[in-house]
Length: 220
Image 1 (spheres, helix red, strand yellow):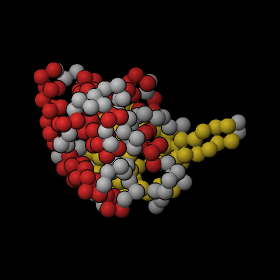
Image 2 (cartoon, rainbow, N blue to C red; image 1 turned 135 degrees about the vertical axis):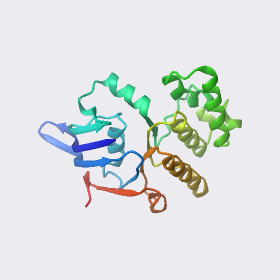
Image 3 (cartoon, rainbow, N blue to C red; image 1 turned 30 degrees about the vertical axis):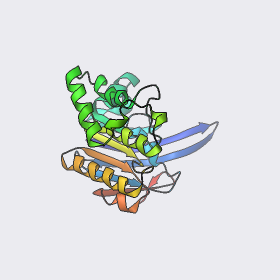
Image 4 (cartoon, rainbow, N blue to C red; image 1 turned 30 degrees about the horizontal axis):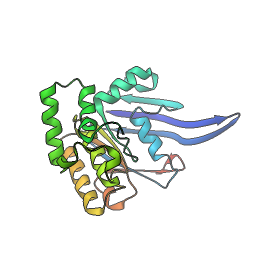
């Protein structure tokens, strides 16, 4: 599904290069659940953004279902991202001007799903996440934990083939965190590929494989 070859990310200032990722190579099979761990500043979020086609590597090759992501134009990258990937951001990234209902509906609009089917999918996910009462509220009317629940619901509503989760339980209390991890595990058991970044040893164990980063390198 995913193949990374010698991926690097650095920023140049004159002749000085500041590396964020160095020589990252690994493969992800469809249906895997992978955890990425490492200290702050090790490049975890950057790696996730590159995998999600929201950032581009400075060097190296990225193949997604055998497509050459590293050679794609922005429009094609955006289409691939919207079609295949659900992204849970650390800072939620909900659209402030839209209600909870409208935020959840947005990925379905990108996929051109018809009105009645959209309504059904949004109703189902509102119910599953116990947020029916919040559907007409705007993000700034929600607590951090509630915003995170909506962000996760939005990421999975269109049933993407790949879910990328950057600290998905970071703003939730431990019981909510376990609920979310159990939900991700259930999605994974049904065939969705998941790559999560976490600091939690408990939640890291939900993955079948752990990739550890340090100073931009993969630790062996």
